[in-house]
Image 1 (cartoon, rainbow, N blue to C red):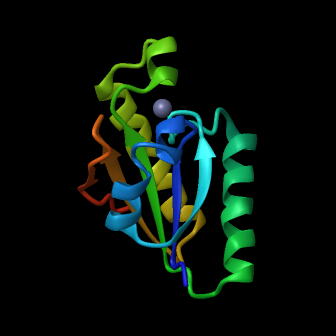
Image 2 (spheres, rainbow, N blue to C red):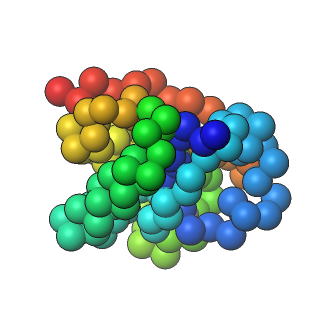
Length: 127
Ligand SMILES: [Zn+2]
């Protein structure tokens, strides 16, 4: 049974060439999508994301982990002139907000490169 929720970009490679790597690295999981994986756009978008995660928790109490993924070569970031450094700052910021909003879950950050390889990034404390 899936114990993990991932929050990731709408990039179609997640449903194509990256699927197998992600599944091997994370195991069975639920997926919530945002632009760039890390941009719920505004407070309303963030609240909707938390609401969806809580809805999943209500149907599966085994969920204990949420993984926020950003990725290399992101079309949304390119279109909005978001450099990698800024993308990682947004990732950290969203992860910190999710830690506070969903204290029952272990919230982690990851980065997916062009080949679909997942790397875990240092945990943030939520402080
Ligand atoms: Zn993307």
